[in-house]
Length: 434
Image (cartoon, rainbow, N blue to C red; front, side, top):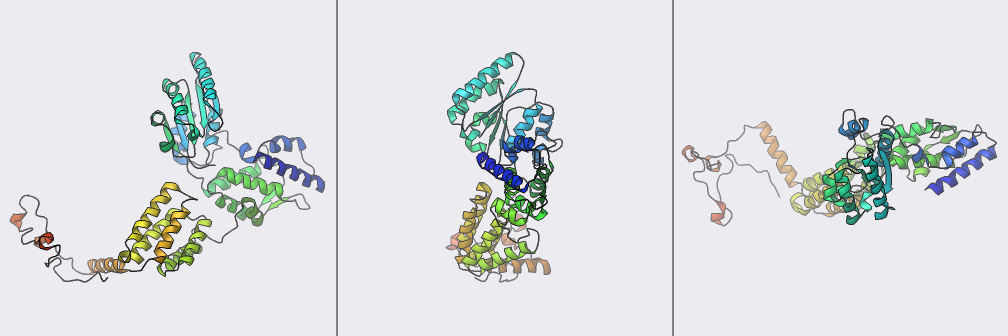
């Protein structure tokens, strides 16, 4: 990515030169060409850090530990671009301990041994060492085991980062010696804040350039970045560096430019407005009406627009029971499995089990008998006098129940081949109509 950004910057410089525009060339090259915008905008303090209030909000454990410089071994995990590396940089700036940085994708056991050996020497001099190990899931069991004794003895304080669930990829012994913190995708408003800051910052950001960004364009980048701050900043940088300035030298980032920069077009879809309700309504009615093509189209539209896949999965579960029901009980089994899959694997892979459940329900035979039955029964409960349980059906398991007549005369169906006629309701009712 760095090479691509450098080429884009060179192209940007050519545009400026062709237009005869002037700016601080040394500053531009030093602060912009060498490193991508996402790297330059990496926060250095907790005040600059955006998101993760559930672990870094005022009074939260991790924030208190960072502010007091009392970090113990921790594992940070979450999707790309959520701030794992940024948080490590914040800790590196804050701590008085020596900070070592390794990436498990490129570091070997020899690199690890060198770091640990120098850490032991520092410890004997009263200087602690924090080892940040990025992508720890790439370390095999032997490499992770090599860390154990020194983490346990306090020779190094481990800060590990991973995009994978550490409970599946990190040795249980290391887990037991570390606190695990989950980082969540950044909210749209958080990413918007990051984008605005990048446009205004003249030292690290794009503030030295004359840029006007439409709010709709920034919102599109924020929405389509899927909670990934790095992805959003990269898209903004591409937009700024590949858009020719106007006669006044101003670069205007429009919605069309934003679409091109993040490689996703705008879909008219407001997750809190009419489009949200209209589309989910059409989705359900298409499944109910047994039109698999329409159903999967509306599913794709919602997913592309950034709808919460868990919301979609819950609606599929409801449809499976309400509109298919006893006509094909497997529909509910598949729908609930899809819901669990969505929660377990997340997007973008979750689109596949969602599509499977959608198509199964759309193609299944339909029956709303279960829905009609519970609705009718609920209506009677709400309007009519509540019927008492017949004595022969009441609980007779506790001492004294039989003296009250509970259970007397009850016919155990299995003694009669699985079915026996007896009174189950004092008043005859017909709710289930298969």
